[in-house]
Amino acid sequence: MKKSIFTIALGLITLLTVSTSFAADAKSFASEKGYTVTDGSKTSAFTQKGKWVYTITRYSSDALPKDIFDIVRNTYDKYYFNGMEKIEQPGNDVVYIVHLENNSSIKTVRVSNGETELVQDFVKG
Image: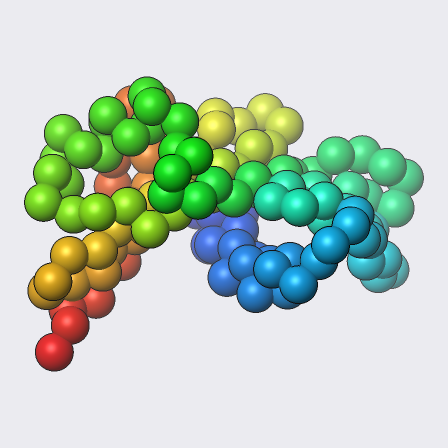
């Protein structure tokens, strides 16, 4: 269950990053399954009855939380940070998706419970 929600959230992050970059004020989107509310760098999803499903908060490279920055920096010290998303869900640990880059590759790293996991690694060439 956690992997599938994580995969869905990662896809949503990509979609929401593009769609919310044009948002000036809070916006919402409703469907038969529920609705999402976007306010600046934060997007939250709710069921039709208003039960919170998840929140994704986007951070620019200059606004990364220091504790997450330090965890990632320990393993990926030769990369610079492009940005990060924080994913919160009821009943689950907070997950951070960190985007890194250097001259040879672009990496996506998952951070949860103080541990890092390489999710994607694109070699430039």
